[in-house]
Image (cartoon, rainbow, N blue to C red; front, top):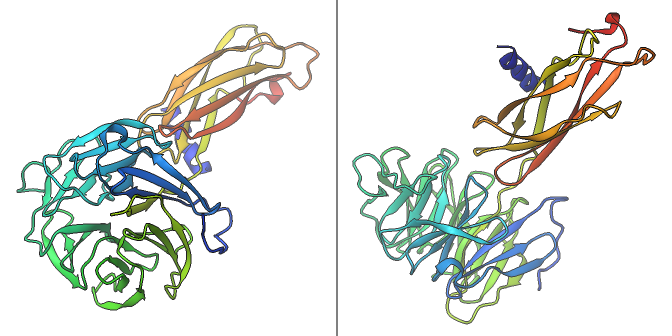
Length: 406
């Protein structure tokens, strides 16, 4: 009970891009599925640096790269159209494993939804998988099928609206909204033939239209077409909004990434991707922004009394805030002002990102030590993506009982 109260207290306490200023100190990393080259490139928008390849051609068996997205585990998931697999790569681009062997051919866009499940488009169905890669169909569906509506045309684009519902677009020019529970499809809007979809910061829906070379804007609630944001972009396939609030689009046959002004659609900048003819850059995504972690820690007791020379058990407990789903690990090191009792070690956290461990400290101090003996306990806790946070707390053996807090 004391530990629960303590943790509750903790929570209460606590190349060529046309130059244009990017929002200060914002890290913007755009990841590009390069279709025919079977690879993934990475564009650092702020520094205008292209890492090509970020995922090497054919790495892990990748064959025709289409969808690209980041998962709740911060890893990169890439759809291989012709090898019918979802491949998982580390945040640094190293191949990890085959996340899903899909029982279907011709895979396209893929995204993790607000439910942290992976949605994958085939020509005619929307598939869904849980975080372990197991099929997660909608009620009354089989296999991994989330939606098998009678879609007009071939499915190409996928985005999730502010209400959490999935929206899909076809190359025949129809956008559908999918019921979050049943997966049933309802017509939302129509246009000149679509590939990529993305919701903007204002809640409007934007669609890449390869056959007309346009980016078209729709009201995100009613589906009414508001107008054309940009034209003459070539065979535009993917669209994603950056941390600066502007849309970025890929032009497959031109091998270009366009940075568009979010207000008037003018081309702010363009970047050339290396590709050997045919389809070049297609679906794109930004790496999600990382929220700094916060570590809250307490020691119980934080004061050792009486100073009788005995070893006392001190529980160190805390919580790593903002760690997300996944295991946490930590290490600690005690620094004794007297240089005598200095244990160190490692510990494992709980699924709720809390942790607790015990250290033995000596309840003694020199008689002439008027400010008491001080133990500094330094901790570093790391989440499943490799982010860390640290904090140092103090345990004291006071000089006299009047300064003791039990």
